[in-house]
Amino acid sequence: MEIAIKLFQFILSISILVILHELGHFLPAKWFKTKVEKFYLFFDPWFSIVKKKIGETEYGIGWLPFGGYVKIAGMVDESMDTEQLKQPAQPWEFRAKPAWQRLIIMLGGVTVNFFLAWVIYGCLSFFNGETTFDTTKVDTPMHYTNVAKAMGFKDGDKILKVDGKTQNNLDKLSLDILLSDQVTVLRNGKETTFNTNDDGKALAFKDENPKGFLTPRYAAVIDTIINPKTAEAGLKVGDQVVSANGQKINYYDEFQAAVGKSAGKPINIEVLRNGSVQPLSIPVSKEGTIGIASYKQLEKYASTQHFTFGQSIGRGFTRSIESLTYQVKQFKLIFNKKVQGYKKVGGPLAIIKNMPVDQSKDGSISINWTAFWSFTAMFSVWLAFLNLIPIPGLDGGHVIFTLYEMIVGKPVPQKVLENAQMVGVIFLLGLMLLIFGSDIFKALTGNL
Image 1: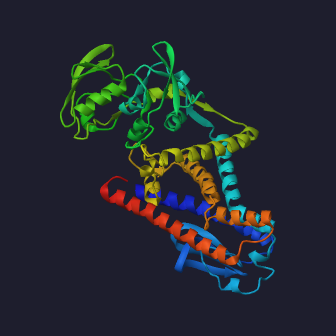
Image 2: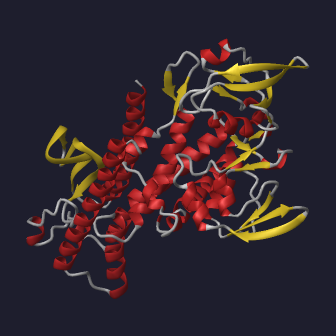
Image 3: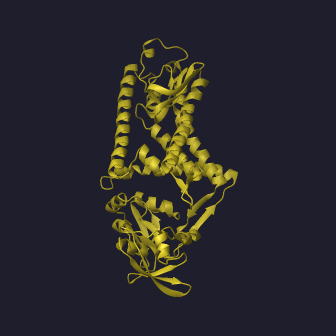
């Protein structure tokens, strides 16, 4: 059931993005009286699932869910249908239109993608507000894992600035550190600046959660018990663990570490309950877990900011730019030889696996619509950026050739356009096969 819900979310999100992106090409093409032969959601090599011709345009749904397209008459596109291009240009063809009109048609898709992200982020800010984990409210030291220490952090450090800028949002703080060159901390009462070590960043990317190297410390007060065996052993909600196997426990992360070391055997703990200390013996799974959680006390560090309708418009734009900026910055990790962030790059299978869902107390799974729309907005602005990369086969490739024509005063030779398009399509297909193949390999090896 969970995988079905995640798959549904992925298809719904992609469908929304593709249809609106292609509509961004379709509408200005129609406005400039250019013939649009096809409008397709997903690709349709050899056959389509559904198709219907209305007027001069065939509308349909393909079977290959890797995007979609509009086929505009007189344009060199991914279909590589050049027969029509051998004939004299007709007034209703793309190639017969002025360069400025062709530029607007080609930029229509990415423009819609960006405005979609803007609208979604604006609506989320208006209707839901924005909840952030404010690090300025944390009155205990941060917990630095071995990954963080490999980057250069030490126990007791208080983070002041990342690359010279203050960041009080914990979610963004972790990512900023991964993308940073320098971090300034308060260490032993003195400001200390150090270069973040790429070896530590490489270790972070080997974890399932690369941003999990930095967490606030809090008391080991149990607020959720999932495993019935743990409850049967005597542990109760509200208990505060004060020792484990003879080791004093001050913070929850220390208790987690102690439990991990006792994998497959009972752990002897002492808990503070109603003012008195009680000993307990808790069975630990082979994976080093006992089925508990302690996170509700973190709610005091969370703050929610609400926005008026007018403010949400500006906030939607700002969030779109922030999302794009973070994604572009992550290229430095993808191509870093030490970090090897490319190993974390995933395709459709990885995206589906990580689609957000809500799980109720009875175990039922449902869609987290706030997370869904956040993902769709992020993916929309990302698609806008990717499509602007000047590779033949993408909108950016067509834009570059059109700008060249506008600057030089004459069009790029038809044969050059066809050859460039062919090279671009082959490159993009190869890249898609590589990413999808990587997904399959990771799934088969259990690393997806």
